[in-house]
Length: 110
Length: 115
Image (cartoon, rainbow over all chains, first blue to last red; front, side, top):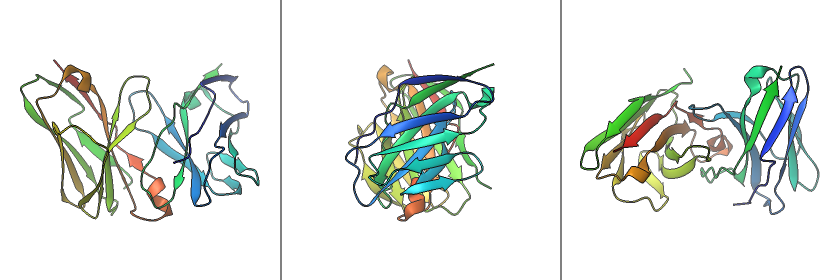
């Protein structure tokens, strides 16, 4: 399982776009990149998953460069309710095994 | 229904007690998981059940005993726990053996305190 590296914490303001970058230098050919969000005392929530280029859903966008050694989660126009821990995970889609890194603690200020 | 339910929400138990945590989902998922999460740490995988069979055991001590009675239910039986086992226990489910196995649905967790 590829190891991931993320910033420990980030701060931003309401209405801003927030980009969280994850480094995964040892990503394997079969690996997908998945992001989860977790609020205090709740279970993580799946946000988005991708393999290459760009993926967008109603919540976020995921940008993956051609070498796939990093990925960027983009949250448009954040609000206070986006304050949470964001986890980047990399692994074989068939492995079922989620290995959570330390995550990025995102704080949105008024 | 995309909900995973867990009971109880909170549990306090002594080191000699036997208790069980319960998890239920009705999304037709055939993979179910137990995770343990300590404060300000990421979740750690404990067990994976795939098609009601234990497929992954992450070297968890035998005082934790999982059970999957059917495709909708997952239990975690607890016996002779230690204070350091106090944590948030999370249950999750997903489709099995395909890309969507990485899209896991988590329950709210059971906050366990061992005294």
